[in-house]
Length: 69
Image (cartoon, rainbow, N blue to C red; front, side, top):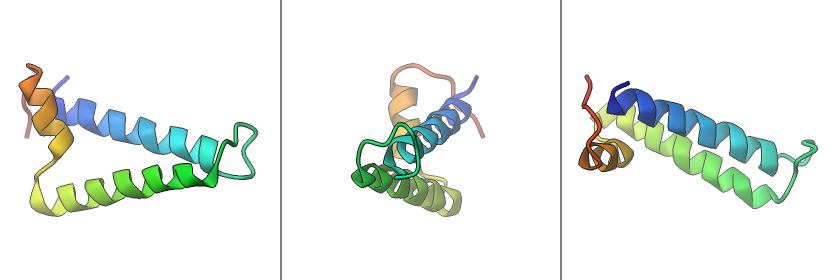
């Protein structure tokens, strides 16, 4: 997998987990403050779509992951 694929899988996983533990109707509810993580990851995905710049992807490339388009 390339760095952009892993980045998007990681972002999707973070969104699902934060929704699971941040939604009051969830059986795994911890606190509604976890929804801020959902908003943060979503905002980063949105800006990445427009600018093609993603801090997570830069970090993963520095760890030695292969880049992607």
